[in-house]
Image 1 (cartoon, one colour):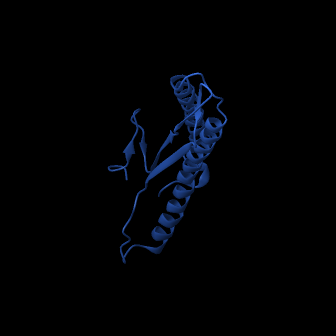
Image 2: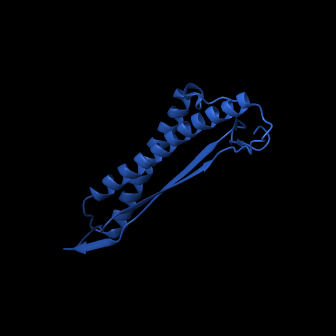
Image 3: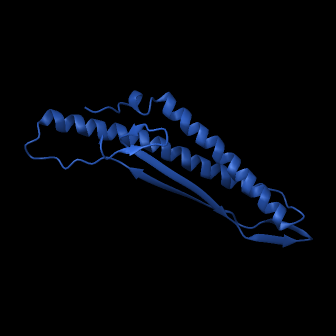
Length: 145
C-alpha cells in the first residue's frame, strides 16, 4: 500500500481514495419570451480506489482478522465521501429545479452553472472537514497494521 497507494497533490499518501463528480443537464423550456429549465437531470459518479489483499492460506489468522477490520473501517470511511457526493447531487437537483425563468437561455445557463458550482464548492469543503474530523478515517478504525 505504501508503494502503490494514492499520493495527493501535497505529497500525502493514502491507502484508499474516493473520487466523485456531479454533472447536470436540462433542456431549455421556452414560454412567453422567457427561458427556464426543463426536467433537470443530475448524475453522481463515484469511484473507489481500495487496497486488496489476496490472502494466503498460510497467513496468520490474527493478521487476516486485522485486515478484515481494517478493510471494513476503510469502506465505512470511503462511503462517507460517497454520501457527501450524493447529498451534493440532491442539493443541485433541488436548486436547479427551483430556478426562476430568465429573459434569455444564456442567462439561465450562467445562473444554473453558478448555482451548481457554488454547491459543489461547499461540498468539497465539507469533504475536507469530514477528513479532518475523522482524521482521514482513523477515528473510524482505519489503521493497518
